[in-house]
Image 1 (cartoon, one colour):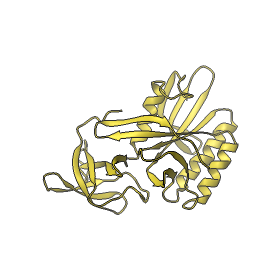
Image 2: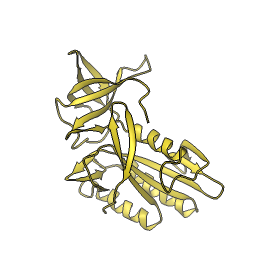
Image 3: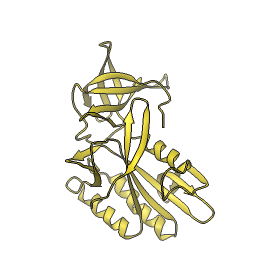
Image 4: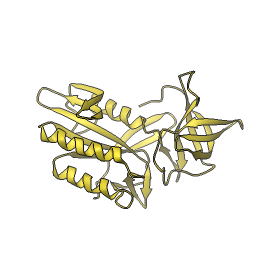
Amino acid sequence: MKFPTTLISGKLIRRYKRFLADIELDDGKVVLAHCTNSGSMKSCIEVGAPVYLSPANDPKRKTKFTWEMIFINNSWVGINTGMPNLLVYEAVRDGKIPGLNEYTHVQREVTFGDSRFDVFAQNSHEQCFIEVKNVTMKVGDEALFPDATTIRGLKHLRTLMEVKKVGMRAVMFYVVQRQDITSFGPAKDIDPAYAAALEEAIRNGVEIFAYMAEVNPNGIELTKELPLIL
């Protein structure tokens, strides 16, 4: 997946009020950027670290930039939570993910019950709902999700179990937007309820995909599947 516009480089001054970040551009100008990540962003915040921003297309938007990535631990970490949804949609549509590569119809943002899922795919013999989660936190060499208590994430797991109960395929897809890790698992210390629900979902037939993504200023690409450690 390529970025539609050329990104703008700078360095992080501070992130605050969850959705805002002050960024110093290379020319010394300080701008306000929108941070799409509502979590704690543990292990991917470092004052003074290089960052890249994308310019906003909407002239009415108060923040004229979106924060896309930050350079941590000698590699780029993608922090835009909207990018993994598009990345997985394109990969499923183009048949690039083993196990999710035989669908003839793929669309975004489809509702089941009281939840809206990121991707819906179908072919002549099955239908599949896919929820995508952005992962940035690491502890040691392991990527963990979530980095803060997530009521919405818990709801998605429970609805995916309902999807499975009615005979459709249910998939939770974690995109780890960093390369300095070797495995993926639930953050039990941060959100034990989510970790327990994930194990319950697996027992009830919900499929788990966890993939590392290579992030750079030109674009984002899924690279390899990660082992799941519960």
